[in-house]
Amino acid sequence: MPAQPVLLAALPHQTGPLVSLVSRAMPLGVDAALENAALLAEVAVSPGRGATLDLWEALATVAAHDLSAARAIEPHLDALAILEQSASGAVADASPRAARSWGVFAAEGGSDPLVAHRDGDGWLLTGTKPWCSLAHRLTDALVSARTTDGERRLFAVSLTGPGIRTDTAAWRARGLTDIASGPVRFSSVAAAAVGDAGWYLSRPGFAWGGIGVAACWFGGAVGIARSVYAASLVDEPSPFLLMHLGAIDELVQSSRRALGEAAVLVDAGEATGAAGGLLAKRVRATVARSCEEIVVRAGHALGPAPLALDEAHAKRVADLQLYVRQHHAERDESSLGRALATAGDVPW
Image (cartoon, rainbow, N blue to C red):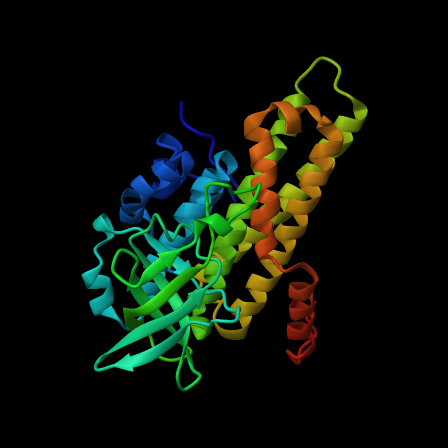
């Protein structure tokens, strides 16, 4: 039976090819997601090329059924979009979509930061990269690192060659348990530069990729909202359940409008530079807040039973609670406020 798509546009519309594909053959679980990554990549179009709505609706559709699958697919498609946007055609050509599975490792921190050293015409990476999701399962990754000159650059690396040690034992999570995101130690690993110094953060696609992650959060929240809706389909539903269902609908619609509008702006060329960064901050804040409240309201509406007895629901809640913490709460809201205060125009 086809999966129900998660739509973002204000009006009913014909779903795009990627949504149609994931609806027909939902890649449930990490294994299926990675196995189908190449197939999805053949249909997916990078954001900003006229099919952003289809891309984000597909991510939300997968996430509504299995957040782990969406968490595996989203960085793969993001990596391919980054390679497409970069000037490093040789990197993209050397890594055909049909044969690779990609991650994007851009977190920084720790006592042993990843450093890139020149090695003839190429680069070598040495150090430890934190938060490397599925590094033990992927073939390749785009990895950010500081050069010996202190510049931040992006590099493409093979994860199957020598000099790489993954640490899955560090992953103690109770949500996204199958998306091990432990540190990876690089020891003189050959890498190819992708874009110029600073390009990774300054490119328009950085903001768009962040909104794609929010589409996954939104899909996870829709999955939880559907559980509340299903519980209301009885002869005499509790008025309190109905109250929470109404409030959840308001939250779902708020996030849906934010994502749908953002897709239109991205494809119209209105989400580049500072405008793109501000849009991403706004959309992610809206979706993150909605996700958090939907989790709370679903708990109040349904009580403890589905959290204790319904494996799919309990997993979805735990997965979303961890996944949405990629939004840094008050820190990201402060960043949004700073962007508004320094823009020089009245924002509303």
